[in-house]
Image (cartoon, rainbow, N blue to C red; front, side, top):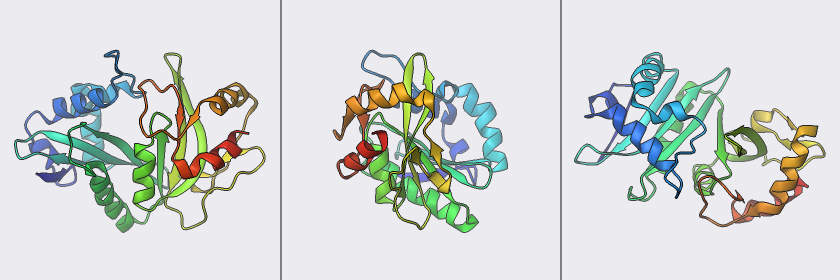
Amino acid sequence: MFVANSLDGGICKISDWSEQLATLTRTAWTGKDGKCYFPYLPLTTKEHWEQSVLKQWESNEMVSWVLVSGHGRILAHVAVVKRHGYHELGRFVAYPDSPKNAVTSLCYEAMSYVSVIGDPVLVETTQAHTASQFICEKIGLRFAGIGFLSVVDDISWDIIYYDNLDVEDFVPQEGILGDPLRKPVVRLPEHKDRLEIVRGILSCEQGGDIPPSKFHVLPHRLEVVRLIVS
């Protein structure tokens, strides 16, 4: 088992790398009904990896790390994407039979890379489960509140923010949902209906469904999120 990355072209040396990454992403975001609910569907196609992502790798606009079995099977993936003034850490995917802490170990690799550059790091985890939130806290990131991503095919995708700023965790404030990278996420009138729904589906269960039916948060974050949405 070994780690490969896009910086030295190691990922592209893996057999069927594009098909493997598309299948891994698609599998990780497929619900019990057999449908893929990933909000960024292009990443579930090999063509997107071969064309758009490969160009991002070549320019270091996106950098990826993968865990590979001894038989050449890609088991997990993590990436950082360069944004304006910061790097976004995400695209966490792994097979259920991947080794424990597979994604976490790749996140450490990614954070080491960004630390050399010196950019701030932002993570947008979804409400579908607590696994990504757990990883963020394990690698020492700061809880930065919540927000709303978008509605895709009538499915609402909400966000739990994390960043690597060396300041205290977000404290609930009137009219503010979060402060990722110290930028306030203002509660808008159009958030009212969704906030009412979230109040009724808050959960600290570890597991979750795809598509999400609850707003999952870590147990020690439940009360602060309850204050935010209230």
